[in-house]
Amino acid sequence: MLNADSVARVVAPFGLNLVGVASVASHDAQVTPERRLAPRLEGAESVIVVGNGGGAFWGAYRRACAADPTRATRPDPLDDFTREVVEAACAPLADPQTMRILFPFGFEGTVSFTRLAVLAGLGTPSLVGVLVHPVYGPWIALRAAILVRGQFQAPRPADGFDPCPACTERPCISACPAGAVDGAGWSLPRCGGHRARPDDPCATRCHARVACVLGPEHRYPDDALGYHQGRAREPLLRAGGR
Image 1: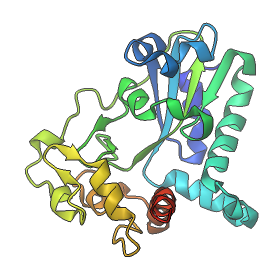
Image 2 (image 1 turned 90 degrees about the vertical axis):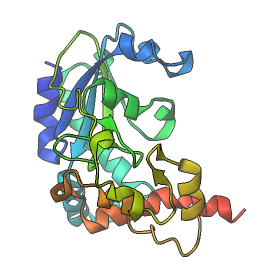
Image 3 (image 1 turned 90 degrees about the horizontal axis):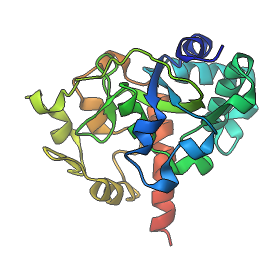
């Protein structure tokens, strides 16, 4: 049976340890028509949000690459791994016609996974531009969202969690070489402009994110940090070369 508990059980072996549920109606009431979820699956009432906290998902990906080195040579190796894992894990749970799996890449780009995670109680916006979790801090990522019929529930660990206003240390602000983080939050234009430089000091990690006082023990491995920073930097470098 497809529900939040069954999804959590089948994706856990791959390091996908964050599973929450959001209401489709609540989501669609907050977005413009082209971003609504209901039209994507007839009768959809809930969206099961799947993500990872800490580096276990990256570890599963690296093991898959070790078993098949050609994986790492694909254009989008981590996205491919994500899709394969989630689709294969969920396939036995329900008829494909009764669910729809969305991913935060490709043509599903009109869906805000950040919004879904907040609605599912999995994270809270932070000064550094990423969601934070009570246990994992900024070291979480959203990997999939499963539209389903029926109303379900799941734990909501981030409900009421809003640590940045009370944080007195705020090392994330001074750690950012671009000055893109301040008391008002994260500046995308300032960050993007800085990271388009050939000598970008943030090429291997986001220094503000690493400096966050929340969940440092769950920080992604160095190779994971480098991979994500490099992928995010590629379009900036291409745009700068036009």
